Image (cartoon, rainbow, N blue to C red; front, side, top):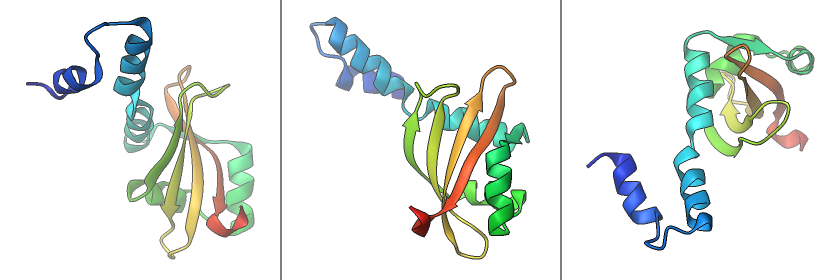
Length: 124
């Protein structure tokens, strides 16, 4: 049995109500945005917002350090309905051990991941 079939059996109530179908659609989409962003980063399809560039520069963080932190990072939240682009919030660690929060978006029109901002965990 495929994973999606197993989830469907657990998640979809027998009445098939509209509310249940909406919950089903939401459940299936969990993690898909993260996967799109991850794949784009892995394929070197990424851009940096001007704000992110300024944040990196002011903290002495290089682009590669922000990207390297993604791989061992933990997904904190997904915002698939965010505008202008769907985004995720990641808790990441830089190579020097500093904990940061990074906001990554997926820009569908150019099929690229975009680092929106990055800030140190203690700057909240």
